[in-house]
Length: 264
Ligand code: MLT
Image 1 (cartoon, helix red, strand yellow):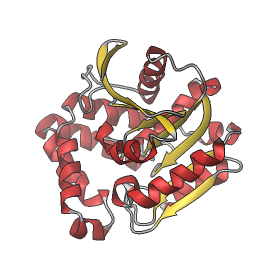
Image 2: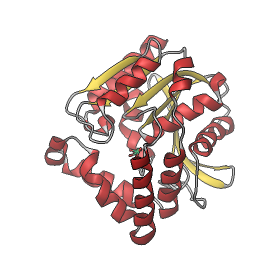
Image 3: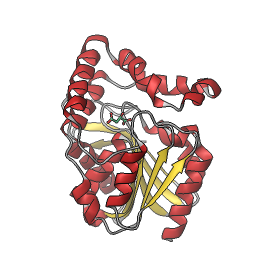
Image 4: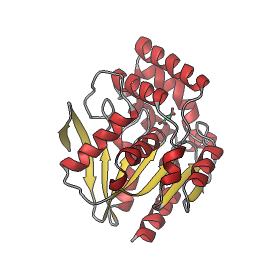
């Protein structure tokens, strides 16, 4: 489906019935990331799954973006869909940064949080310098070069051997991201603030999910989030890297289903 949001056309999925669950994809991916979760959970949740601006089938706007702008786009989508009741906001990696910003900006709209393969800290100075290098690479060589630089770290080592078709699918998603979307997201991530302050104020149910072989975010990142959110639950998914929802969909979906059922 498509709708006009602010100054661009956003593509999104709007499926299922039950409590509203907004799922936000990571960088430089798109809403197809969540296809398994839509299939598996549409009987208990109303899933709202956007392509962020510059990603997937959503139009690009000129970079730079901010994480707050990306959170505002998601908020506007809910308004357009007429979703007034509080939602569960979920995101993977950069999607997690956006979910945390969504809560900072719209606390009254959030009834629960799902944070997968993400971290709450801001970029280190080394991380910021790497963002600048990636921006230069994207400008000079485009999305294919970004995809090749990221793919070796996206999965658990075994996934490359057992699921080559999945690696290819992710390559296609990355290559399909616009250069403007890539640069916009990189600048947004580079400038994002630390979110531990708002996580310590969060007093609703939260689920943190992390692959035990994530090469991009450490288990310590996930444990720090779990410590910050009072009463939150951390599920470690075995044999999964940075994309646990795709590498181990059954375990991921079961964890999410348990969380949603406990909310009812
Ligand atoms: C992502 O997977 O969304 C990004 O790799 C996160 C990041 O680079 O910080």
